[in-house]
Image (spheres, rainbow over the protein chains, first blue to last red):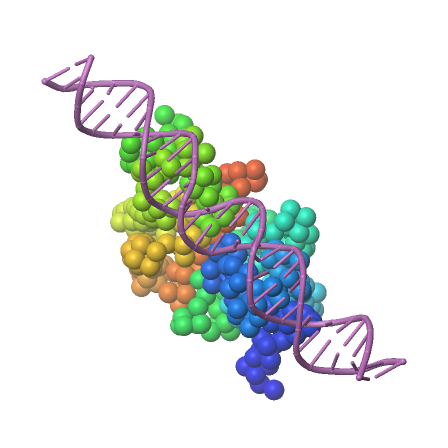
Length: 207
Length: 207
DNA sequence: CTGGCTGGTGAGCAAGCGCTTAGGGGCGTC
DNA sequence: GACGCCCCTAAGCGCTTGCTCACCAGCCAG
């Protein structure tokens, strides 16, 4: 299976963990709608319509519209955490791990920019309890990336005077890909990942 | 007048161009509300309430809620354009101009993070005609920054293989400050500006 | 054939939305 | 003191919203 075909399969399986089929179709429809118009501008009628059901059917699978957002946000953040985690725990120098982390993280934000847009820009629409839970996942992501940069600073691979600040900037750069990325744009997700990995390595004074 | 006092004055004068007083109070209230909750989650009753008026009073000064957003977006984007413009047209090397551009642009996004949040993240709530107009201002900002980076690449000051890509990343980095910046955070707007200017200069391979 | 379980529908409710309208108080002008 | 003008309010209209409820088709087990 080629890289493109493999990613196409991942795309269609993005919500594979959500069952039954109707619940998955609703999640998929909601992500599209939320990404396009925003959470508050999306109606439950719109989501149900995109999933090919009546408005009432949504409430068989989810108690509220916010629960749908929470499920999307949870799955999305766990995926993002797993991406950074894989890079952070791999063998190799801090430079190699940082390159891998930024390349895969930025690429994911480009490839899954609809999902990413929802999880990054609709956090405030979550209930306070759900927000707190999601914030925990975000903190873990942040810590993993900071550790890579700290390792590089300690080993002398990087020139990073302000490790927390640099971490913030790197994370911010990757996250914001979700805002501007367009499939009609000149760059593929792979190219975005490669470009951003290069820019970040220069930013930390590696190479 | 010290730098802090001067910026405090600028803050209170951010909407000085909006008259009469009631219209200015409405703009100011709307920015707060839009930044806090988002455009669609904000009600005209909330805006009017924050401005100390009845809901109906809003419609004496603005035809619709969208027109309020449009006024905010227009004024904000013009200010952002003027900041980049001042840096781009100053005397000095590409390195000096880029440092100044990033420092002032990032600092503005931190200092005026409420306004910045509205103009950067509520674009899709504008009417198509208004969006087109604002998009023009955004393109001019982008062009000015790209020209600085291009100048540095041409003169050999920068090592920028992909000028449009690097421009995108720099702009993205500064814009995203509006998303994460908090007055309760550890960094002042000045510090954010200084940090980001350093990081960007490394990113383009200057110094 | 029957009965319950799963996953769906059509209709509609209460609340809240953007926005309008009729009317009024305070002001300077003559 | 009457007038017009500007700025405002109380009330409410028409509509859409998130969500509910009574009901039902298909399907598999006994």
